[in-house]
Every structure is written in structure tokens, then in C-alpha cells.
Image 1 (cartoon, rainbow, N blue to C red):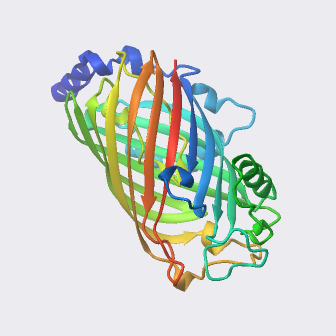
Image 2: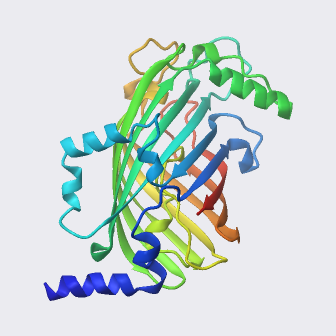
Length: 344
């Protein structure tokens, strides 16, 4: 009893992670825009995960929007008894909602015929809701994300064609052969656990574990690290949460100005299923067979984040992974990203 009281009081009095700042979730805590493109790696390539765009809205408002899947996410959490992992201890919960898209192409985008010996064209337009729960006395945090989207929309061709027209790039001609061409609903449920391993004034390290069920089904484990001028708690920065593009996560600020830090991480995925490669229920002209899927996929990421004005943040990053499928066209992939955040 005395030990738990001491831990809670210690947390409440810890200057950079005060309950006054983080304990009560505001209605609107901020927003974030994420933009990915494989051309930002400096290579003249347009293939694999070729790009993505996402807008994240953070705060209690994510639970109240007319178009929201948060109540469905919370209902599934209750059925699976996920809150039972943390409800016995004092905790803080934060929420966010994300709208986004991701685009995937083979190496040869000029071909008007199906490209059978490479990854298929694929697209996903989605909405997702997240609950992020921190248990200070355990140095642990829990992640619950529900993503609902549509595969195979013709809009993907329009988006990429417009971007290539602006940049005078090759015209993509194979979108009629994309996975689930014509459109098909899909979904993914994500659960994760974060453990604070080490935190100091200038460095933080955490181990993370995650499971996904849906259009990507896998289990994974890895680490996230950051170093520099850090004035926010260990759980406030979450580059680990990403399925190609950065997933929906609440945004947080420091309690001081002028944060600047470098960061990196890696994880190993045991991949069971990926609809963006294998297709789903609807017929797809080009897919990767289950026997040609790589079951172990390693990912890495590194970047830098700076607070360039009061509560405005800019991150630049590079992410990549090893081969996702087997065969003569198998290859690793990498892409660059820019993340712009405004925190209230």
C-alpha cells in the first residue's frame, strides 16, 4: 500500500511528466500530417511502397466524431478483455483518429499488361482510431488501434497519375490489375505493449511488442530509441507504430520549448498474411502466393525531430524492410518521410 502510494506521488511530482500536463486529456490536443515517398531515398525508383499520406487528429474529439470507429474499437477491446491488462493500476488514456492512403506498385509501371513476376499494384484508403494507455507505475503503455478501409479503389490511379504529371514522371499503366480492383472493404486490429527500459535527460529506450489481425496479420517485437534534447516522457514519441505509413497515435509536446533529438529503431515481424500482396476475397489478377511469402520480415527506421516553434514539430525519416516475398523480383524496400505536427 505504502509502496504504491509512493510511486503515484513520485509520478505526480516528476517535473517533466506532470499530471497537470498529461493526466487529463483535452478535447483537441493537436494534429499531425505524415507524407511518405520512396523517391525521397535519393534513388530514381518508383516501386513497392511508393507513397502514402495521412492526417491524424488527436484528443477526446476522436471518440466523438460522427464518422469514427472508436466505439467499435472499444467494444472489441471489451470483448477481448484488453483493458484488464491495465485497469488494476492508475492509468492515463489518450485518443486519436487518422485518415490516410497508401499506394504500392511493381517495378515496371509503364507496362499495360499484368506484371506477374513482381508485387501487384495495391492501394488502401482508410480511417483508424487509437486508444493509447499509459501506466506510469509500471513503466508500461498499451496500444489499441482499429483500422477500417477499402482496397482497390480506382482513385489510386487518379492520385498517382496526378502526382506523376506534376513531377513529369512515368505514367503508371497497370492500376486496372491492382489487388481487389473495383473496391473491397477490409480491416485490421492492432494491439501493442511498450516497456520503458531506460530513460535519462538525454536518452530513452523502450521495447515493444505488437500483434495485428486483418489485412496485415503478424506478430512482431523490437525497440525504439531516441537521443538528444528531450523534454517529453518516454511514451510520448512512437515511431514503432507503423504499417508502412505511420499509424494513428496521439500527439504530445514537451513542457519546454526547443526539443531536438535523433531516433532509430528496428523490429522483426513474423508475417502470416498481407492482403496488399496476397489479395483478399475478391478476385485479383496479380497476387503473391502464400508459398512465396517471406515469413520473417525485418524493419528499421531512423530520423530526426525538432521543435522549430512553440509546439510545432518537424520530423524527417527513412524507413525500410527486407524482402516481403520470394522470387527473381524479390528485393528490400526503403522510403523517406516527413511528419509535421502541431500540439495544443
